[in-house]
Image (cartoon, rainbow over all chains, first blue to last red; front, side):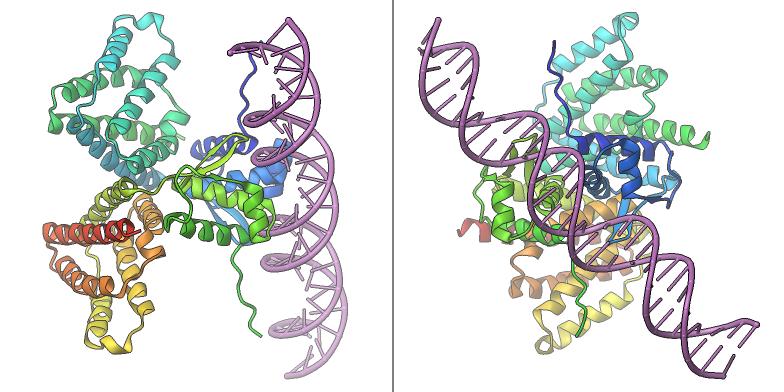
Length: 213
Length: 213
DNA sequence: TTCTGTAATATTCTATCAATTAAAAGCTAG
DNA sequence: CTAGCTTTTAATTGATAGAATATTACAGAA
């Protein structure tokens, strides 16, 4: 038996609420009752409190002294604002990764493998390699703060938490290969442009999905 | 008697620890004991825990499951990384502020007043107008996420928390006037360049101060 | 030396107490 | 009798302390 490594309750609660907020289960400006959430989830109030603070620091809810929390309304502008910053930071990360001679050979191999054997791969494989590529780029940029913010924006981006649509990942595959190739050839401007288009497409995908509800 | 509006304990503790960490009172990779801190400050463990999470989200400490927290080592690279991202974001904010026709007349008046009456102004006045200028620019950029991150970086920047040196603010005064004027005249590139120099000077100031200890 | 079991120590979660806020009932004045 | 203000009351959050759980250190045996 594998001793399943258990997440802390506060983190679990935060993930749950994050998912719920980003997927639109709470309407904007709705009040989040601390006690209600704790009762619904069957946990104590303390971990829920901690989850609230976590989400507050991510900008998904706002806390008021002695008055509880209200959820930010997730509208079109929210998504655009989010991705504009993501584009700014991730493009900078790509530039720095190229300057630091990032090694992309392993990632390229994995992407090629996915491309050649599309039927043997699960959706989780795509998600995993997708995340690995982005994380590797942030890492190669060699700037702790930049890495931290990229990760924060990644987690707050509903694309990865909610709708890992298969078509989206298939299109991303070609973009990723082009991106990695550009990095390998040290074509900074080209890599930059690909990254921007890649993220813009993700954003539009999300907005379209958002408008349909 | 005035009913002083009290900050939550967790926020107070977080401020205390943030100041301590940024000013180098804790050596890098030092373990922070939850119970010790709570005993030292004479408060319960819960608010300290919440403060830890706050600081963790700011990247000043790292938490490990059931193993407590360790403080990030604040070295030269930490400061450089921090300011490189700040420059990236705040320069983008300036560009957007200009595009959105930011109104700088009030801020310009306040700066001129400070410049003309240097003796009637306290250090707090400089700090206040300094913060107001930057915040106004972020606000005028009209991007919630960008604003949030700029504020986060501002708070995590030791310049404002620790050493509000008077000479630094005097030099900043001229830079601010030049910056605001450039914004008023919609000279995006110029404003950008001024902002970058301004922040770089802050950074170098901080590094010099850091090396002296 | 290496592995295992026990003890100590620190963290995480729960339950209770205290303080603040919002609302409802009651009272006075017009 | 109604409007407006005060007081009381209900409910929610903030803080504290104790119970449960996980990790680390150390001692003893293979």
